[in-house]
Length: 607
Ligand SMILES: Cc1cc2nc3c(=O)[nH]c(=O)nc-3n(C[C@H](O)[C@H](O)[C@H](O)COP(=O)(O)OP(=O)(O)OC[C@H]3O[C@@H](n4cnc5c(N)ncnc54)[C@H](O)[C@@H]3O)c2cc1C
Image 1 (spheres, protein in one colour):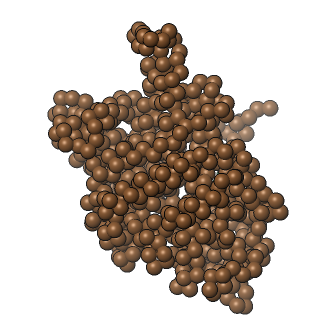
Image 2: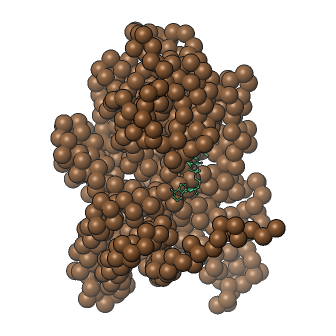
Image 3: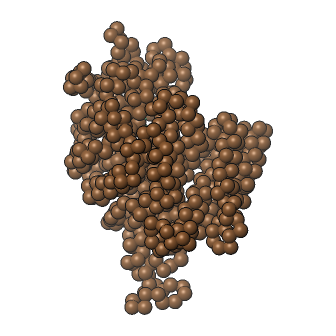
């Protein structure tokens, strides 16, 4: 089994040396308490929780899974105790307002926490993870009474929350939602309907569960403009927050899943359940998607998590297992054969995992700074600044979610591949990572939907390419000072510079084509998303390489010479072995749409 060890050296390198988080926190209105000592204590404390409490439950939780009897869901052995420890440590309220019992720290610290927890045990992390969406919704859209009633126990973690959107007939196209909310004389609503695939819909970790539910009023307009948002507690809550009677919302079944088996994914039946409207009538979908960017970045973390964990599993195996001799002659001369790690193809797989884990981490740490500004502006009541940061984050979100989860899945598969046949059997735990990674490209908006959001909405419709031009400008600015450098750094900088220009031109070409043929957007979107991901990861690999190179030449970095050398080498690997994949995506997205659209629907099968 991979023995999770929090990658604190890389996390600190990125936080302190690459992204100057100390300066960033000092610039935030809510960052005063996030001193370097505090950040370090959080990293250390969270690493201990993850390594000692959560990681040991990863495989056993998968083996046992969740069970359901008469609507009561039992989580695997050890989950209840681990969750209690998580709550007792005050981890849930790290970035939530102090007025509700949280610690009020910047939201990026919560992402650092989630990265470690999610890598140690993603299925466990989904229980507190879904609560974040629920808390954010209640915090932003609840009235004072609702906030006072529900926020404190959600922030402490005593209660958990869910997001109930999906129904049997729709997950992506929420305009088709049918769950009904009937107004009652006392101002409450009775909800009727079935939601499926609800993560943490029912479990035994917390004494109450607060569901955030999308439903329609009887006279609501059709489509997305007729959807409202409701709070539906599992147990009704009295004014003093004591629990009242059981509400008529029950788990009808648990989904039988390929992976994340320890995460309870429930069919939830609302059978006249009492609900309370939150936000404005018929504006529920808008409200639900307010914190979409941060929720999606939370899921993008899953790509980094699975790349990291499968890498941590694969490296010791590749050093230990022996097979034949290296092509360049004997390496481990005291053995009759060489370790796998000497073989170029095995190194390709390991370095791909590493480049994705560390490159993805950099992408997320950059976006997390924008998220911090966004949340701080909200707390300051500066709506214009909030909207500006939300917009900026909106460009990164589909790339992070779509690209990183696709690559995380690839890396989980590579982890199995390094183990050969031993990767496919359960004994080593590598196949679990691949099964668990599979969901990440599906929920919280499929890769296809992220791609449409990126190219169709953010790039073409909303900004006419400006968001890309803004980012390529940053790529050029970063690369420029190193263009004449004679070493690997110069080579990478020149590549980044040329790629930035290529991406701009490509965007303009797509814009022109899309004007003539609407299918261009749908046909090109996936390739555009992946292309954008490689460009962005390249930008952040160059950033890391620059810092590592300066630290090596000045001898003043906080890390060892070996660490910085390996950083530069991983960056080179990315530029030479992964970035060229972008060329395939470029060629594909510029191909005529006819090869996708021309076939008659009846001709997809001949029987
Ligand atoms: C384990 C698990 C946990 C989940 N947790 C939750 C949860 O907590 N709460 C919740 O509400 N939901 C949850 N979901 C549901 C999840 O978010 C949906 O499954 C997902 O949004 C996709 O919706 P769908 O399954 O209806 O697929 P569909 O919407 O039917 O899509 C099917 C395929 O068609 C593509 N497609 C759809 N529309 C378009 C279009 N317009 N253009 C191009 N391609 C399109 C999609 O990309 C996809 O490939 C969960 C699902 C799973 C499996």
